[in-house]
Structures are given as C-alpha cells and as structure tokens.
Length: 280
Image (cartoon, rainbow, N blue to C red; front, side, top):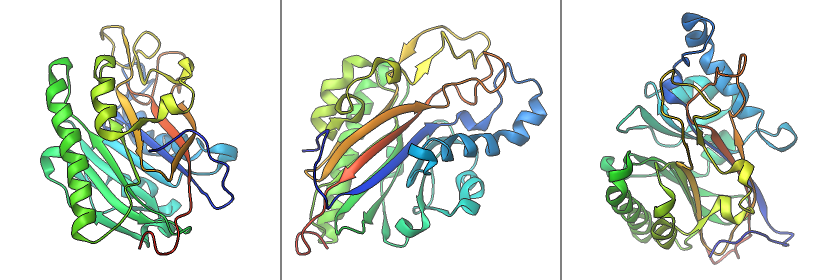
C-alpha cells in the first residue's frame, strides 16, 4: 500500500500536475474575451511549468476539459511533452495525459473503455519500477456518486487486466483527475483506488478545496461553495507521497479573474526502486 514517507536512497522523485482547465475559456472577469482566449494556452502552460519545486517542471501533466483533442500536445510540445496514447472525450471536453519525452519513450498506452473518460499508460521508471498512471474526468453532479464508484471499479479492473495480459508485475499506480467527488464518497473510493494523496501529504486545509467559488468567481452568477472535486490516489508498495499543493488558485488580473473554475493539483512522489527481477 502507498504511504506518505520514504527513506530509501534508491527512490525516483516524480511530480505530477492534474488540472481541469475549463476548456481554456476566459472567466467572466477577463478584461478582454478575445485576448484571453488567445493567451489562455500560454498562461496555462506558464502556471503548470512554474508549479514544480524550485521551478522544476512536472514529469507528468494530466488535463481534463481540454477544448479539443490536440490542445495538450500543441500547448506543451515545445517544452518536450508527449501525449501518452491519445485523448478521450468526456461529458465536457477532452481528457489528456502528457509525459516528458524521456518518460514517454519508456511508456505504453493502456486501452480503456471510452465510457470511463480516462486515459492511461504504463511507465518504466529509471529505477526499474513500473507504474500505471491515469487521467480521468468522472461523472458529474451529486447524484452521480454511484456512477463514479462503478467508473473507479472499472478503471482499476481494466488496469489490472492490462497488466495481466501483458505479463506485467507490480500494482503501483497513480490515478488522478477531476473525479467530481463529494466528501461522503471518500471511504468508498479509497477502498477501491488506494491512498488519497492529499490526506497522505498531511491534509493541509489550505490545499483542500479544488473548487472554491467563494474566492474564485470564474462564473458570474455561480452558487458559492467549496468542494474537493479533484483527487489523486496512489496504490502499491513502491509509491510514497511527499507533497501536495494547489496551482491556479491566484487570480490573473485583479481578484476575480481566474484561469479555470477548478484549481489544479501538483503532487510529489518518491517511487521506491524495484529489484531487477521484480518488474519487467
């Protein structure tokens, strides 16, 4: 089972950003709609690439609500990121999973049922550990809780089935994205997917809510509430969460103009080394 700390000298650091970017559409408070529409890819890119520790760009970028299939590739290709096996359409926008080129060269896409609204791949890290990573945009609304449970069950079963089919060993995985979850669903989803990265990193209240329409007035007439819609789960005995914080939670202009109605997450991991004959 994944845990919060590790003291191994054979671990590989890994940083991952996940963000629902609201189709890169301008907020109601953007000074100029046309200018913001043009600048949005650059602003999103700068926010994500500057989010890492000591400005180290993330290794993996999970996006939800991309406005079109190639948005992620077009926005990050010059920075050396590659889409991990294509995008999939969700109930709103496209889901993408981008890897640094060095990781992409050691990755394989995992075919999933399109009803999952998820993109996944298997990555062989430099320290011999292999991990599965997915970006997801699960069913919306409070009444979608049962559908989300089934989606999570199907996602995990699909990943395990792929590993078995390809004779992969190890159950290390990072599953993240806009899960549209409510707090009452925590236990059921943790029982399926594993450790909640925000909790493993210390449950810092300042980093709890990825939706806060009290502060973020992206929508002019939206109902004000807070929620932790966006989630990251880690499974497997090689995965260790070392940090979790939010990005995109500061206004671009003034106090009301945000890049998205969601805040993004950046999560840091130490991935423990596997023995050479443990995972191939």
